[in-house]
Picture 1 (tube, rainbow, N blue to C red):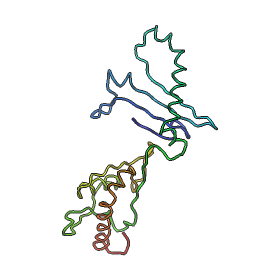
Picture 2: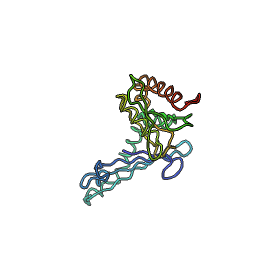
Picture 3: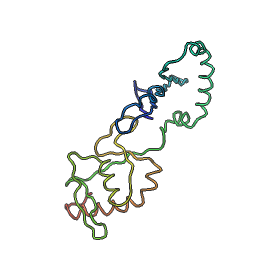
Length: 198
């Protein structure tokens, strides 16, 4: 399932669900083609409009004759959706799930550090062709035994390189350990690179 805000135009929400081959990142033949669905949600004044687009594969003619009755199903679907958590989140403007954006700053004297040996306070600079906070956080987490699940985009929009997205529940679970280790990284950064900010 993929969701993107402000697509295909500002104010709209697009959600695509499909069976995808994770290795090839392509829709699975014989499964996904028939099961691929697109849902568009748009708010206009006091009304919320839902459009669901799906590919009907080899639908028999007798079934097509029954399609006018689909409107009853659509009415039931809208009622169920209005009672759902997703609808409540849309109405509140909070978003789909609880995600936070984290950022890094005050690294004017070079890239941040990665732990080599925390007990002996040994550190090394994070090296990458181009700085990416999600990549740095994943590597930092691996080295302290804390697998961080972070992303470089939210609602389909790419973030700047010094920002990352993490789910609020995951962050709440990881934050105590991560922040303690990161506090030590900041102290080591000042000691190694000089200066008073990190």
